Amino acid sequence: MTNRYLPMTEQDEKDMLHTIGVDSIEELFSDIPEAIRFKGELTIPKALKEPQLVKYFQGLAAKNVSLKQKTSFLGAGVYEHYIPSIVDHVISRSEFYTAYTPYQPEISQGELQAIFEFQTMISELTGMDLANSSMYDGPTALAEAAMMSAGQTKKKTILVSKAVHPEAREVLKTNAYGQRLNVVEVDVADGVTDLNALKKAYSEDTACVIVQYPNFFGNLESLDKIEEITHSDKAMFVVSSNPMALGLLKSPGEYGADIVVGDAQPFGIAPQYGGPHCGYFATTKKLMRKVPGRLVGQTTDENGQRGFVLTLQAREQHIRREKATSNICSNQALNALAASVAMTALGKAGMKEAAYQNLQKAAYAKKQLKENGVEVLEGAPSYNEFIIKLGKPIEEINQGLLDKGFIGGYDLGFYYPEYQDHMLVCVTEVRTKEEIDQFAKELGALV
Image 1 (cartoon, rainbow, N blue to C red):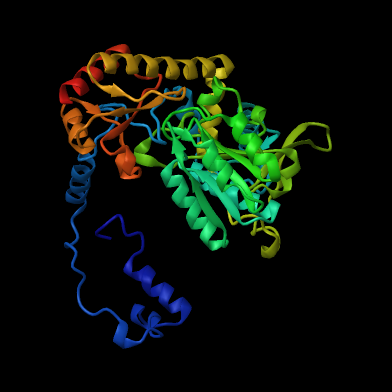
Image 2: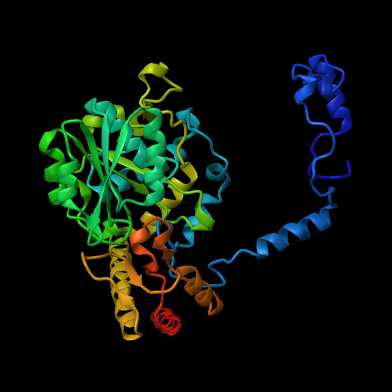
């Protein structure tokens, strides 16, 4: 072989063709009409030798700006948090790193227990009866919650606040289109869901009301008032929540939420350019058999020893398709394990402390920005994100910040025209006082 990236030799190719009874690769495509087959060479560069190829891709990778090089104040759904060193140590073990779906409990007790612990901790954080074994990511979990609500209530309209992450709303609309459901977006007032607009949009056909807590702008919604409106006519209350914030805030379950979803990325999962992540899905015991994905349960074996099994799998792989509640076929087991290890390492006191530092450092950043002449929008109480008004294109501001060693905040004008030239800033527990002070100084100089 001349290239180690091609695992099959020419002889391997001949043997495979002989086994399936054809003489050439071209014969495999004989069913495709000649008129539509591609003729000629693809307009791509010629193959490189391995050293040149590695160097080329390293050059491309070097163009990325990483958190190791710059200090980040960017959040908007993906966050830089403290990751205990034990997380990488555990998830790098081969029995977890290479594990697939634990169908055989007799050889998968470690994997099953890890998932069970994840479910337990998510349930405690959200204040719900149970949680599934994780989902692809937060937006997927949110869409699944809406689909489940529609299936349970037999209603067709989904009300979602515009203060829910805009990308999550796009995922929701895509899923709803396939299920012939109507998605109605509820306006925002002063950085939170407009309760009057919600009341007007609510009808007897409302399957669920979806809000985010803290919302996309970092503000805290009045979940008690939203719950009262939602449950006035049997609709379901769905809350998408940052699990790190729940270390400090009153849980959605205490506010009467029917389903709580979100992304476990803040726990032990690096931002890594946007994914992969790990969604969570928590709900009440009443809805247990409607939960998408799978649930791991605890039991005892014939000797009375504690053991773990896949308990419920209400998905199309295991039951008749027409009775399936979801097409979700896998969970993010490795990332769920990372989240479990991180939560365990932090403990209840550590999680509360981390959440508290997010709150306090964001408040300190607001103060410093104001002192440097930056306008901070005040309104509802916020957690670790907040909006600033700059009066200049955010792209221009962020380039200036990048030149000074900072990754700036999110350009809200991209999804919200009313917030043109506004930036969403995030401050987590890993930011130091010196970094916050310098960021405020540099941003103040740019505006």
